[in-house]
Structure formats: C-alpha cells, structure tokens
Amino acid sequence: MSDTGSTRPAVDTTAVAYSSEPDPSGWTGWILFASFMMFMLGAFQVIQGLVGIFDDGYYAVTANGRLLNIDYTVWGWVHLLLGLLIVAAGVALLAGNMAARILAVALAGLSAIVNLVFIEATPIWSVIVIALDVLVIYSVTVHGRELRGSSL
Image 1 (tube, rainbow, N blue to C red):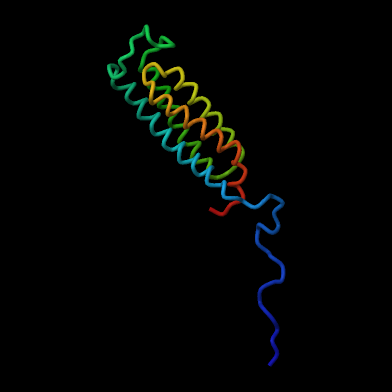
Image 2: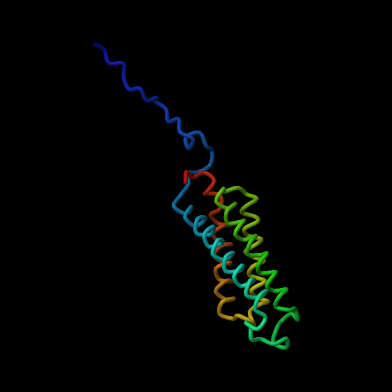
C-alpha cells in the first residue's frame, strides 16, 4: 500500500496568507474597548439627557453660572440625541470600517465639547466623560485599522 501524503495543501490558504495587510495584533482589544466605552458613554448621555428633559430642578446651577444660557430641557435633548448617536457608532465600530471610525472620532470629540460646555452643571462627571472620550479617540485613531483583519 502506498502513502499518497497528507490531504492538507502544502501552501497556507488562509485569508491571512493572501492579505497584504499586517496580521492583527493584540492591540485589537483597544477597538473593542472603544466600542464598549461608546456603548457606556452613549447610555450615560441618554440618562443625563432624560434627567435634563424630565427634571428641570435636578441641576442646581442657575442661569448665571452656565457657560451658555440654554434651558436644561434643550441640553437634555442634546445629550439624548448625542447619546443615541454614540451608541449607534459604537455598534458600527465593531464592523471595523473606515466610516465608522471617522464617525466614532467625530462623535467622541463632539461629546467632549458638549461636556466641556456642560461642566458647570456636573463638573466631576463631565471630566470623567471627557477623559473617556479622549481614550476612545486615541484607541480608534491609533489602532482602528487592526480590527478589520481580525477574526472576532
């Protein structure tokens, strides 16, 4: 009886072997981190928006202490809509395409600006959200390309 050899091909036929992109590294976890942080940030923005819409007396800052003289109901709608967009961008970011990365960076930057303007009403929370926005922007801009080639 003769042995015809292995049934496996001699050449690696996986998708990574034919790709001109570098292999995904361990930094892919940064994109997952950014995506889940966007879920959380979006949820927190939605909650903050609902509080602003339904409870006008929650924020103790008067009109003189605010950077912009806008009613808290308007701020509530801004936070609510921004939060929903951030959650949607977090879902799209898991796909790893360039448009989702651009949208994620733009929305994280907008969230940081909105929270900077809103810092007088919730100073500690706004600083935390801004710091998380900066981490999201870092992880998406530096390591965003690596998620596309990974097999998650």
